Amino acid sequence: MDKINEAMVFAAGFGKRMLPLTKKIPKPLIKINNKSLIHYIIEELVRLNFANIVVNVHHLHERIVEEIKYFKPKVKVIFEERILETGGGFRNALHSGLFLEADKPKLLINSDIFWKKKKLSPIENICRNWDSNIMDIIISLKSKQNFFGYIGKGDFNVKKYKKGIMEIIYNKNEKDFVFTGLQIVKPEIIKKYEEIFSMREVFFDQINKGALYGIEDESQWFHVSTTSDLKKINELKL
Image (cartoon, rainbow, N blue to C red; front, side, top):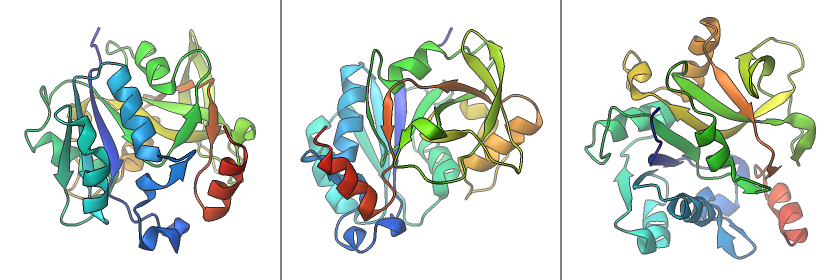
């Protein structure tokens, strides 16, 4: 079974829903308890002994480079001259030569997410549930009703598979689970896509094949989408 020891952190977006705050700072540098979101994420990856971490940047990229310079040489930065979206950004990173083993499964994680772990961190949880014998991709989910501050319609529904793993399904009605922004992917499955694409396209292609798997995470997740969300979370003094 593949050991997951390389990760990519998506940090190239504009964070438009956080305006006007993100005019001056990129969303990954927004702080909770005086520490940036991306700092929490990279700190956890380093704690878990990931051998290599790639971060893509674009909007206000100098600020992000400055923030994460303390994690060199384990963390490498790739600048995107234009936004490639998550899938395109991942493929671009695979072709960059920054990964140690480009053909091995990678952990992908959004840089603007926040959790408080319980027994295991979400990263440990998804890695323990990865099975390369049956999976090309697995994503971390959180029940919509247990996702602090989340008020959307959800992303997916699920049906049981085995030992806590779920097969993800989709319908147009109310959906019970939210994608947390954390996933493990075999690089080979994105080869057919165009230069600019979202990993969400990959999700739906896998759903159509009955091959998108998920794990419900037990940690406490917080929705950080607007300045109001940020204010509420910081008021909790976690």
